[in-house]
Length: 185
Image (cartoon, rainbow, N blue to C red; front, side, top):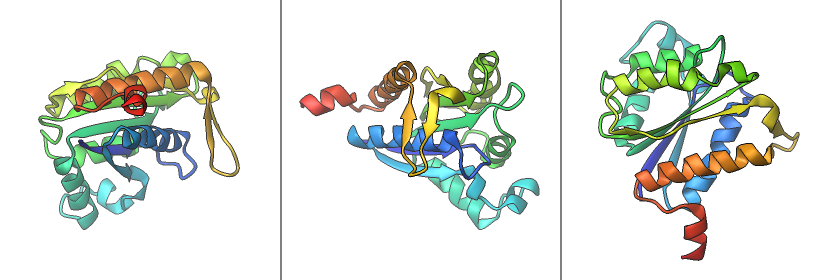
């Protein structure tokens, strides 16, 4: 199956966005994909802030993008746009870092007023990086994501179903099988 890079653009160590991505990563693994997580917040701030293209962490992140056949981009929405941390990383990648890749954009936020951030803020930037295909994305309200003290994550049923659908569409675009078919096969 495909190698998928799962990128969390959240600057927070206790991010619902990152936890939600790790939940979707498990679904993709169950469908046979190799998933490599990348939390932008773990990249050195000085490399991002000073646009240090040669910094070993940026070189390594660039190589992860090169190796991936599919990329999941998850971000919290701040002021109707994707996170600054994600913006900093995307700015340091080569112009066509997504060339030939299938991309799944995801966002989380506190209000439905930010639903269009995927289509009007994130998708144009991703599209400019040359992907072969950007699958339908999904916006999940923060109130639909509950993280327990033990690290487990609960997603409201309607959001969980929608996330499963967009994840399965992404998997199919990569040549994978949806979870239900994988379980039956």
